[in-house]
Structure formats: structure tokens, C-alpha cells
Amino acid sequence: MLFQWENQGTIESDVKKVKDITLASCRLKEKDLENIISKRIDELVRTDQLMIILQERQMKEEPDILAIDEEGTLYIFELKRWEGRGENILQVLRYGQKFGRYDYNKLNWFFQSYRHSKLELQQAHKDYFELKIELNKEKFNSDQRFIIITNGLDYDTWNAIAYWKDKGLNITPLIYRMFKLDNELFMDFDPYGPNPDAPREPESGLFVINTKAYLINT
Image (cartoon, rainbow, N blue to C red; front, side, top):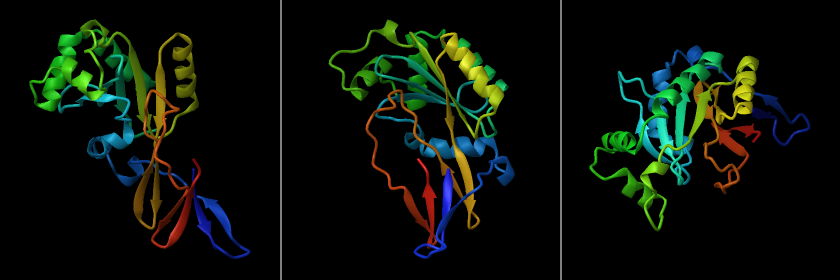
């Protein structure tokens, strides 16, 4: 949550919750979100834990982001500009059904196309995670994780996620929030990584914007 700190240093000093908004209310499209994420992808995805092998290409039925971890597990990211809904889960599961069947050779093709390079995924993975030996090709995509990046979640979606988790499906919501302060847009989200206890850069809870103070409750 984001709070505006009013009347700092006086007896009337207090904080007021800043109401979050949606991309749609700002007349922004899902593609606008994808474009900004693509420029700052290392702020959304913990690239110290995950290696990105694909971003969605135009006119292709592909997830927004594909990544793998040190063990070769495939991470399927799907971005949504609206509040989380049941159909968002169905879409990411459809991608899982499709991409979960791909072997190393197919993932290697995606990786080389994404990087515009002839470097083999197996070698790039070894270098990226500083492994002593290359990961066996059969380990790539032996398991999948699903991440839905969305502007909030409704109760039906939370229940759906709980249901699929109970069935053994690893699916995680990643929530972003949009705020409008002094006619400027701000986005708040925590970067995703498979290890939630990994050390992060220390962040101050106090931000000063246009000489007005705002507090983010983390």
C-alpha cells in the first residue's frame, strides 16, 4: 500500500492511503505494460535467479516471458493489465500445456531466436549460473512454474489458485499496483524469484516526490 504523508513535522501530521488505479483507467493497453516490462525486465524478474530465454513476439501465441532456473525448471510468465480473473489462469495453463511438452531442442531454438545467437542454451545456462558442468539436456523443462502478473486479484481467482496448488500445480500471482500522484504515474511491484528469502538491495520506505513525501508499506 502507498500512503501520502501530510503535514510532516506538525501536530496534524498523519498519513493518508493513496488509491491505486488501473492501466485501463489511464487508457493504457496491455501492450504498453509489456513494452515497459521488456525495458526493465531485470526489475520484474530476479535475473540473479532466473535466466530469460524468450519474450513474446508479435503475432505469436507465446507467454510474455519464459525463463529457466539453475535446475532447468521452466517459468511461464503472463502479464495482465486488469484485475486477476479465472480466465487469466486458464490462459497460462494453456501455455503450460503447450510449452511444457517442449524438449531441449525446442527451448534451444527459442533461446537462440531470442538472443539472435548461435550459442547453445546448454552452454549459455552453464555460464549464466556459473556451473562446473553443463546441465543434462533432459533436465531442461522437466518441471514448470506459472506466474500471473496482474493488477490485483479477485476472490474467485484466489480460490482457483488455491485449488490448483492443492492439486500440485505451482502457480503464483505477482501483483503490481498503479498510482497517480501529481498527474504522474507510478508502478509498485516486487521482483519475482523462486527463492523468496534471497537477499535483496535494501530499500528505504520513504520516497520524496515533487517535495511531497509518500510512504510505501512493504
